[in-house]
Every structure is written in structure tokens, then in C-alpha cells.
Length: 354
Image (cartoon, one colour):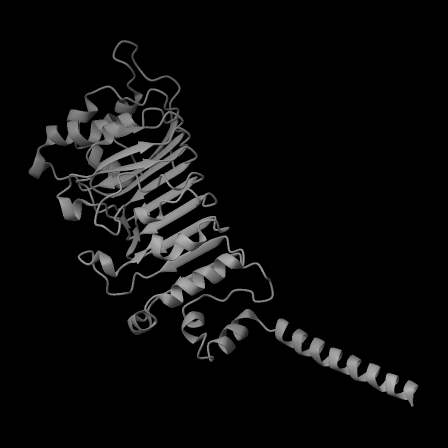
């Protein structure tokens, strides 16, 4: 009886293990989209799962997680606690790439206290493994996040965000100084202070490790821009208009620049003032570039400012001019061919179309 009991017990354990293994295998072999749909039916996970892209539940390390808030009711009902829980969950599972989109929520620049704040969601997890952070919508990069512990982020992309605003309504002049390992920074349609102070603020972008910086359709053209990035290799500027204060940009290691700007209003300020305030400082800030790409709209705009083209080009190290368009006026080519007035033409410049 003892041997029979042992045999029966052993067989029962094997059957239980087989059932467990079969159940586990059946679940683990389901496509991510099916698992995503199953979880979306559960009350506790419905809001989180329906606003997240599917991720692998079999792998204990979630490489990338995208969160998109499209439901105002869900956002208000959860009082943002859900988002904080999801971020903490992602951090605890080794997520390296986190993207959050709140652009569809009805939040305006006039009510900054209703926004998502970096300090609110990331203060408890500053030492996480996040390497890439993407935020779209009204997210505030506030100085409350200013802890020296955020060492792992190498790529930061902000779209439609407010920079430097903290909880006591003061402005941080250098909101990116707390990212010591930041290598890639993209700012799209972001705002910095001038909506509240009539453009008296200066935005400083500093990074000892920064290699790539791109400013796209920034809304604060009255804002003065300062950049301290001794290792920066790429600088891109896109959008309507230019910024004041480009004299504050020094890029000693710059290799390639991309310029796609247009829409300078010479009727409002005057052609000479635009050249002296905006265009000359812009090209001076790019003076160390070895390669320059110009968009067709920029070429058309520059060709109209003879006040600029009559002066020597500050791009003395330029070796390659890449034209994003069908043609480039000869007078603009001559501008970039000009070297120092004392030495004559710029040596060794190649011009090609992209």
C-alpha cells in the first residue's frame, strides 16, 4: 500500500506539473495582441492596457513602452495615479525606452498646474534604467526633477512641452542640466517662459555629453537661446522664424548642420535688422561645421537677403554643402564660397543635391 500510495502521489504530481506546464505554454505562446486584448477586459488593467501598445509579457525585461492618453474621462477619473503606477511598473521591469503621449488631452498653456510634471512622475525612480524618454503633449520639464540621480537617460525627445517651469512658478534657466549623460535632444514645438514674461527669459541648453541637438518649430521666437555643448556633432534647426540671441551658441566640435527655416518677416523688423539680429548670428553659430544641409525653403529665403550675401561667410571650415532642392542661386553659392576677404575664395568646397 505504501508503494502504491507513493506511485499514486508521484503520478498526481506529474499530472499537476503537466497541467501547469500546458497552461503556461498555452498562454506564453499566444500572440502579444491576444494577450493585450485579454488584459483589456479586466477592470483593474483596462485603462492601462487600452492606452498602451502591446509589449511582451513573457520577457521580464520590457524594452519599450508607449502610453497614449486619448480619453479625457479616463485621465481625470484616475487622477493621474494610473500613469504614475505604469511608469513605476516599467521602471521596475528594466524598461529602457518610454514614450508618453498626452497631446489629445484638453490642457492649455494658460493652466500649467493641470499638466504632467516630470518631478511628479519620475522623482521616485530617478535611478531607473530609462535611456530614451519621449513625451508629446503638455508635459512640464520642471526644476523639481533636478536631482543628480538621473544618469542613465541618453535620448530625450519633447514635443509640445513647457520647459523649465517649476511648482513655485519660477523658471529654471538651464532645465537640461540634470541629464549629465544626455547625448541626443530633440525639442519640437516647445515653449519656454516667454508666454508669461514677454520674452525676457533665456533658454540655456547645456550638456557635456550632448552629441545631437535638434530644434523644430519652437514657439518662443522671442526667447534667447544659449547652447553649451562642447562635444556636439549635429545641430538641426527647423520651422518658421528664428530666435534672438544666437550669439550665445558656441559649437566647437560641430560637424554637420541642417537648416530648414523660413518665414522671416522683413516688413515688421526691417531687412537690415533681420540680417544683423538673426541671420548673421545663425551662421556664426555654425562656423565650425564641416557639412551643411539647406532646405529649399531656406535657400529661397536666403537668396532674397542681399545684405547677408554681400558679406563674407563665417563658415570657414565648410567642406560640403548639401542642397535639399532642385537648384540653388549662384549668388548663394558665391556666398558660401567666400572665405576671408583677405584670402579670397573658400578652398575645397563640394556642392551636391540630396
